[in-house]
Image (cartoon, rainbow over all chains, first blue to last red):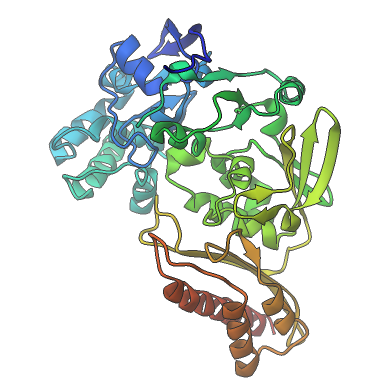
Length: 163
Length: 292
């Protein structure tokens, strides 16, 4: 038998612009709350320990690994997932560039890559290659070898600057 | 196996005062800041504490205050906070560089300097820098505050001078290292997301061809991050010639205790320690020549 220490509580947060309230144990991972309670399965679980970046989301504008966030620490936060990026016109160039440059293959790392790229482009709209590499350094991809992903981010920056 | 969240409690007080009061009443509760270490243990099913106290984003811990004689870095400041702070970048570049080496951007947005100090990994990239900058820690509890030299904080592997009811409030670094040569390097399997085999932070100043001041600290070569006291002693007041450099490299190897582990071997680490000290001294010498 396990000892129950926690009780489920209500947590309120804004997810992709919509206010949400969930009942959860305070140590439930934001990743699980997003996927299981809110049905937002675009955010992936990779390593579950903050190494791979597959579960990246934006929390109050900062890129974070949602597998390392207890939901109690997301109380009141503004969270943006890949579903939010998918319908945000500001990230249209980024989405298209990933498609056209071959930045997505198996797709498991892609939501996290796009969130990391979106975070980078918000801070640095015209990143150098070194800045792109650093901005995405916490996101692992086992398919592409990264080059197409870096090209996609550079292409998205060029298109955003041109439009 | 992953832990069951139903077995854990986490409370998130709104102020530092409320946090230390709760900790005084419940000293077995484990403080959690950005969770970059605690949540990894939770994922692995090795988190012993069942009750956690969130100190993430407490405003009192998330400030960097520039006073005339020292910079007070709130223990809850993230690596991103450190990298973005002008005084840190200008006067304490080793802290900014160590921050940029710590994990990827997502880890830097959550990992805190105070959290890394209390996690006390001997391999943490961020700990040699406060050692060479002669940092002092302000510790806070419901009983009040006290100040301890960071050099005396880590007493053995994961053991430290911190009572169960205390939190680190701030890391204070004296603003007297302008004009020094600041050197840092991390040697690991890859730059991002890899834990170091050896990391170094060092500071020095040469005047009239004589080493006036020098400080060297290393990570991953002993049960705690360490200052190379004997090596520093072998250098102070000397002219930086090949003989002194060779003596310093020897002293550095003698006063480190590296081990074989999953990331490297003791033999490789000892060779890297000697080479890093050598490279630092070459930079120090070159900077002095450049000035004269």
